Image (cartoon, rainbow, N blue to C red):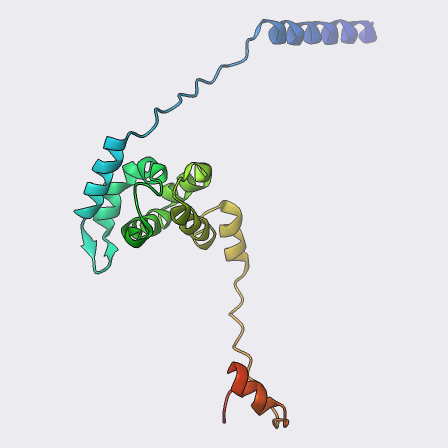
Length: 174
């Protein structure tokens, strides 16, 4: 009797699972496509970056905070909007944004949307330099050993070493 009862219970459970799967509909995720950045938005962003607060040659934390909501506009700027002689403020903003985890994450998720080649190159370097991923943080915590000291050649120099030193500057003088 116990085997028959067990089979009936399992058949009922399987039946309930099948009914639940058949009646459930997949959840539709509505991904809103954001409208493209207009020329007016780009120009307003360029004017805003000109008046943003700075500390020396970099944007202050307050300036980065003010410009952070406009990261999408930064990524939409192209070569026709910013020439390479005036790229520095946008690179400084990118550096400030990449130091924040939210800006770094946006850069990782939307890297393909960066239009200006120099800004894209700069962001590529920054994303590796300021890696905020959980795996990297765990790796940094695991590597608790002290850094290796610089290698200094020891022992007497051979006749060939001064020629190498004169060419490349790799050997120390004593």
